[in-house]
Image (tube, rainbow, N blue to C red):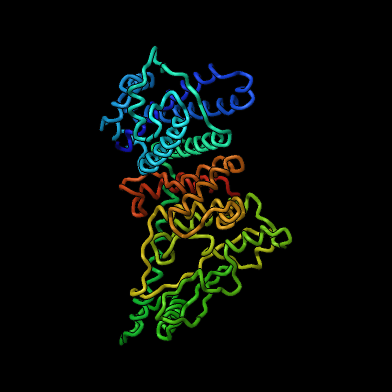
Amino acid sequence: MSGFEVVGVVLGAIPLIISAIDSYKATSQRIKFMVKKELLLNQLIQSLEEQKFYFQTDICLALKEAHLEEKQIIAQIDERGLNLFQDPEISDALKEYLGEGFTLYINAVARCEHILSDIIANISGLVATPQWNRNDLPTILQSQPKRNGRFEFTKRIKFSVGKEDLQRQIYDLDESTKTLSRLRDQSIARQNVTVQPMSRAIARFTAALNAVQSYAHRLLFLQTRSTAMNKNHSNPPRTPSPSLQLIEGLCQSIHQAYERRQSLDLYLSRCAKLCYSHGSVDPGININVNDRPSHDTITLKDALFIMQNSKSTMPKWTINQQMALSFNITSSMMQLHSTPWLATPLTSSSIRFTPDPMKFKSPPQPFIVSAFPTKSHATSPYTTKASMLELGIILLEIWHMRSIDNYASEKALKMDDSYGTRYEIARHWLNFSDDSMLPFYLELVTRCIECTFATTSATPDWDDLTFRKSVCEHVLKPLWENCPRKLW
């Protein structure tokens, strides 16, 4: 049985279970029944109805291109039953609607089938054989008689399940419903993504970010420039450049760093002066900046940890400072993506601050420290989806003023550096943020984590101009509109 055919089995099993429970309630001893099970059984029926609603709605949304009304689609489901879900056109329509979430959707459906099979196994009068097998479920659905669209039972129905097991089944159904709801919201968001092609604000954003990103590439041709310094020029230029002294100073520092195998730290001071310093570095190793201590700086992760301490003298950020920092980091990532400055996705462990300004209520000014390895030690490229996931996590961390590691530890969730694990924990955290987060911020964080943006390529890609415009439209612009101008 294919993954999509399981959807038909689940849709058929839900009405069967509800009818069986209703029959059981009607024939049970009322006093004993009311005391022990009625409330839980009503909750179970409600959970089953919600499951049915989500499955039917998903199919209706997937088949909307067939120009059928919802009543017509539901009528087809009732009439054709399991045969409808053997139609490849129906399966393809659902795949297109769900996109990358189709596999997760089928996995969620399989969990639903497992839960429903456990429930049916405890309903005597449905299962004739003493040894219940999940593969028997389609046979039971097809053999069960119906009258006026409702199942009829020739034997008395008994539902022999303990209170704790019943509560567990209700909980499992509710959790699978949340998964289905999330996947549907993601699919709707993906389909509703649009870019305003004539938006002047988005055009300005995109053009400015593209220009800075191009300069970030050029700035890192250090080895080429250093090699050029070794060439003898017999004829000096007739008209020296007005900025010759400044260029010579910077290039000389680059050349010296290259010759002496030293690192060159460049940073822009608060008074807008370019400063640099040298430090020794072993050229035979690939430097991991996150593991190397940086003098007089703290990471965003460290700052969040300090602010969690009630005895800390560091003031917590105001909502305006949070918006300004979110805008700053998002725009910086849009300027530095696909350059050696971001050899790995930006995280709260790679974003740094100078500690002194952090003690005051001035806007935090983040920066990054990057080491540029030789070509033989070049880092492997990371996907655009991974970059957007990490941005969503950073925005979550800034809003809650705590790190994702801290959240995972509190919730006893296993944490590692894999994309799948970090995505699941971020989604878990996001699900519990609905009531505490501003709606516009919740939407843009969700888009980052789910990577629901307009694209012209098969997958999100930084080289895709439509994708970059979409990120500006749905993430950068809302932050800009909600960030006080004096805090930029």
